[in-house]
Each structure stands twice: as structure tokens, then as C-alpha cells.
Length: 183
Image (cartoon, rainbow, N blue to C red; front, side):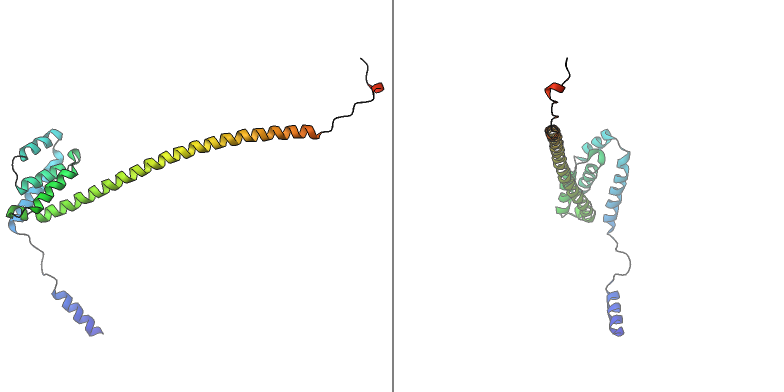
């Protein structure tokens, strides 16, 4: 039994690649340029982001599309649908420039899809919360109306009980006429 476990362990170790996976040199350069571009974006204001987007719009290459996608993912100019379209176009392209960016584009597209899924979920939950709030408001109004009716009915019951008590007390007999005080 122990020998079998050792054989499985040794066989498993033989399939693990030795050393880190190295990307082709061109992929590393374009990825480094994109990451440097991404690091520069938070320092830009809205006007600078728009200017950068206009400047990039002329070139239709994969790196330009990746830069435009990174711009579309900035919180001040968030456009997830645009970023998704750009990233998908990079993944579809088969030229060497685009292929060198497929892994990064796939990673970003996964993030965009997750954000879109979470936004859709957030929208559904917001709508549900609004419906629940409206139902709660309606229920609160109905409860207040029921309490008001209950208070009214209780007052009527109390009045009836008072009348009943008054009727239950036997009237005092009148003293005989000759014993009545004279006025």
C-alpha cells in the first residue's frame, strides 16, 4: 500500500513543470506598456481621460483597444459594455499583436463580466428592496387603519358596557307618597 502511494506521488511529480512559465518577450513588453498606462490613469482628470480616449481612437490595433478598454474601466468614465466589446474584439483577433495580449484581455474580460453580473444582481436586489419597501409601507398603513378601527370598536364596546352597567342597577324605589319631602 505504501509502495503504491510512493509510485503515485513520484508519477505526479514528474508531470509538474519545472520552473516558472515564461511568456514570450513580445507579450511581456506589450503587457508592461499596458500596465504602465494603467498605473498612469488615476492621476488623470476627466478632461485628460477624454483627451486620451480621442487620441487613441484613431488606431485600431490590439494595444490601442486594450488601452481604450482600460480607459473604459476607470471609475470616472466607467463603461463596462464598451470595455467588454473592446476586450472581445482583441480576443477574436488572430494577429500576433492581439495574440500576445489574449491572456490579459481574457483576465480583464472575466473581471468585466463579473462586474456586469454583480451590477445586474445589484439592480435586481434594489428593485426587490423597493418592492419590499412599498409592501412594508402598505402593510404599515393597513396596520394603522386596523388599529384605528380597533380603537373605535373598543370605545363602542366600552360605551355599551357602561350602558349595560347602568341598566343592571335596579332603580331605587320611590318612597311612599306620604313620606316624600314636601316642597
